[in-house]
Length: 258
Image (tube, rainbow, N blue to C red):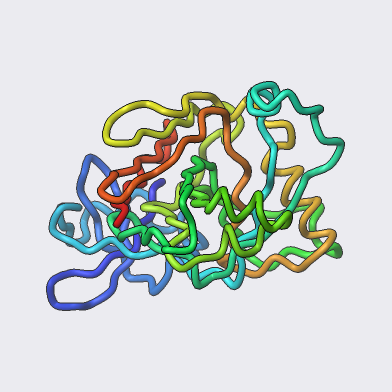
């Protein structure tokens, strides 16, 4: 199922199911709450009121305490960079303040001259996971654009500043359950032109391996996000560009740059 958070013209916020370009409103206050009750409504949700997606403001699907990111997690990307495959995941983080929704604007900071996009499969943490309970866990999936000030990344030698500007983490528009995350076409476009085009089967570390590894280090809270790395073909953005991130069974995340 595809879950969405949205706001209507009366400024009320809702959670719904997306199906055939329509939103079917649910009674729950969050996507994670809705997913926890999925079995009880999955055959009856179409009886609820619905709105066309074009008629609503799509909101960030979850409110993470942190976004944990993985570097160099695609074999074809490592080959592109002529780098040896890592023996364990390379981690960095983005602050929650960088998160925006689809259709929101990415702000091009004056501090950088080289702004890049990175298409990534996002993992959504559905309940708290730590080293004591990470043998069995439930997760869902979304889209993430790991926007990066590449020149600042190269200048600083560590990645915090380059990854952390406000608006540098577009997420959404939906959270999806019941898909195979390890065999999905993943791509990016800038102004309609394909830039990245790969498959999540090229990941070095699977989503399950990443959750296990990261939760052995830090507690993953409900609503936290993991950005699982990007395939080859990263390129630069300019003011006025529209950048689109797509994953086969999830959907499209689209943002404008200004």
